[in-house]
Image (cartoon, rainbow, N blue to C red; front, side, top):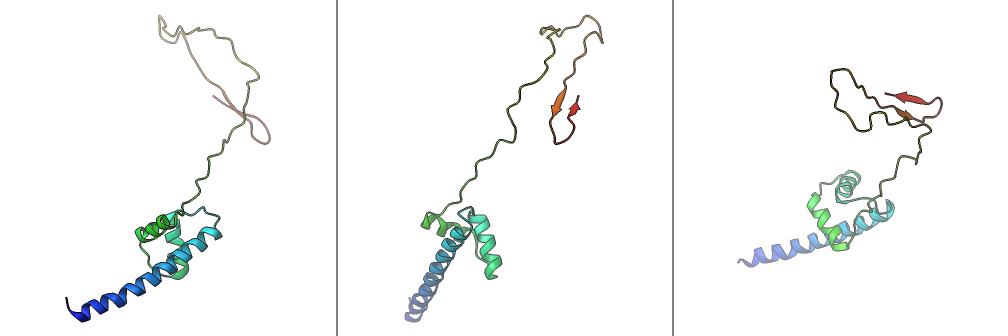
Length: 123
């Protein structure tokens, strides 16, 4: 190996290490700024937009893994209320669905949605 090649590599290594340290500091700052909700994809997106640079998603992910920084996964909320029906029809068919001729037995289902204002019924 040429001596000049070795020293060129040695010089380059320091610059990459300094940039990696800057990236790690920036990741920690963004993590605190956004309350830990950014994953590696959105972290890369924000860093590239804010600093107008092009960091690879794998590089940001590697640094986040080294720092043990992960996104907070938000729990899905229930979007319904427990509801007991006001009126239930009687079970006329009693699970006997076979008919001797066509159009002898018809079934339907009514769904009621409570929205602000009047109640809507859908069949």
